[in-house]
Amino acid sequence: MNILPFPKPPAPPDARLQSEARDWLVLLTSGTANAADARALRQWCAQSPEHALAFEQSKALWQSLKPAAERLQQQAQPRRFGRRAFLGGAIAASLGALLLQTSLPGGVAGLGADYSTQVGEQRGIDLAGGDRIELNTQTRLNHRTAPDGGQGLELLSGEVEVLACNTAPLKVRAGAGWVSAAQARVNVRHTEQSVCVTCIEGTVLLDVQGRSLRLHAGRQLTYSSQEIGLPQSVDPGAISAWRQRVLVFEDAALATVIDEINRYRPGMLLLLNAQVGQRKVQARFSLDQLAGVALLIRDAYGVKITQLPGGVVLLG
Image 1 (cartoon, helix red, strand yellow):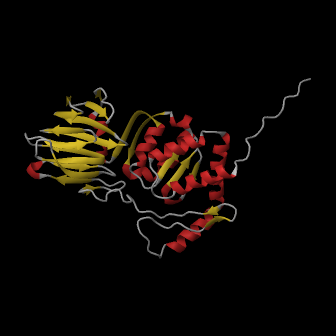
Image 2 (cartoon, rainbow, N blue to C red):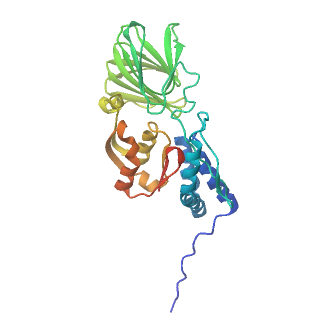
């Protein structure tokens, strides 16, 4: 008779992994974490069962101390702090510091730009001659001299819709290229070192790395400093739906959907289950309903949610 041994459970995380797991929680509640940090955390947790267990233990410890955290947060309310909010308290004698945050949207994202928007904010800017720029959430835009010596704009980060009414083109610098629109409507998005240009109406010209390209309505092109993609056909209405405060997703991976939602809400939704993140989504969200989107994801995909300070929600 052969007796099979029981599977050996993962070894308890060592002090180094426990410290790194706490550091990840510190980052998540600092108000500075972004989508790249979220991907890095998922990769860290996937390195080994011990890594994942260390982070699970840190989450569990936070949950067990949540009542104490809420009391400390209430005590901090009457005091005045800067944009970076309250961090303090004790997480436990054995583990070090407990971090709390009551953050304000946007942080310092807009400092130094001629025009900017905060998290979830949208605004329009009227330009000379009747042209108009609509700024989406977390966008920074500067005045910039165009290559021909005329006045232009530079999209430092974020997303804009350009409504160019004149025959003289309105020129926008984005990443490694220039977008020129005359009597046209174009959406330009500059996030994570990549630029995506979508012609909504009319025709737009692109000058990227010495190449001149033309986009007609319903065509989209993505480029970076390293490469230029091929034009693709897209639904212009889905691309510009944010103008009506709506997000439209068509056959998009859940991880991509969550990254996009994070641009519009304070804090961060962080999906730790890579397999669930590959699930395809057909969805339409109103920006006014994003406060409850974590519960919708929980109910639709059966993931567990853990609430952290500053609007951070772990989905795993």
